[in-house]
Amino acid sequence: MTQALLFDLDGTLIDSMPHHHNAWIEWHRRHGHPMDEPGFFASTAGRANAEILADLLPHLDAAAIDALAEEKEALYREFARPSLQLIGGAAELAALARSQGLKLAVCTASGLLNMQLAFERFGIGEWIDTVTSPADGLRGKPHPDIFLEAARRLGVAPEACVVFEDAPLGIEAARRAGMRAVALTTTMPREAFTGFDNVVAIVPDLQQFDLGALSPSRPNGEAHHA
Image 1 (tube, rainbow, N blue to C red):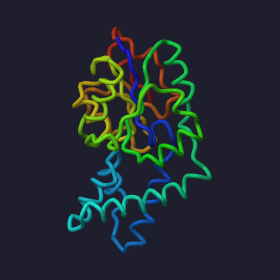
Image 2: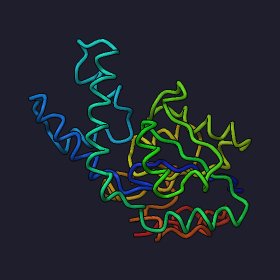
Image 3: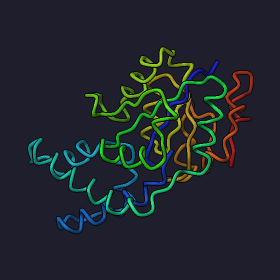
Image 4: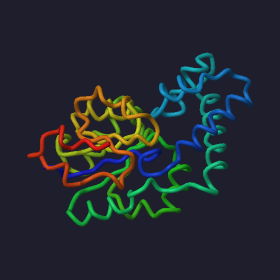
């Protein structure tokens, strides 16, 4: 029985990934670093900035990494502030889930100021019961930590949770947590998610997701959408 829905934030509840992409492109340009755009975004979607930059610039100490990470996030907020939108169906799905007694959480690698921008604009804090992120001292995706901590706080077993994600690293984190997952193709194509046995639906946005598809009596294959 499904008892909780755990949502990634960027690319899942909010249409922020184009702004993150533009911010990373501008960051690389300013620092003179070459960038393989498809490879970079495929390998980093869902990861925390500090982890990405530590791999990119292993000679720098933690303080320098943190400063560069915040520079990138400031660029993101500059790009996002005028035009950030919710993913289609996000508010409606949250309201329907709450009306059915489900618990909700946001589980994200997003920084606190980025979360604040989205939460204040869209009232996301009123939809959910808890937020988990690397700011809590938890490892980022593909580690399962933020999903397992959300389940613990909600008092729900991992197998009773369904994760909503737009990145393969997030789907893998859900798999490691023993949780089913719904993949959104807002950031990456459908093919990026077909190898995961915990994926119960692949949808273009939350407007196209049928909450009734989470019934445990329905075979997984019937829950997939185009």
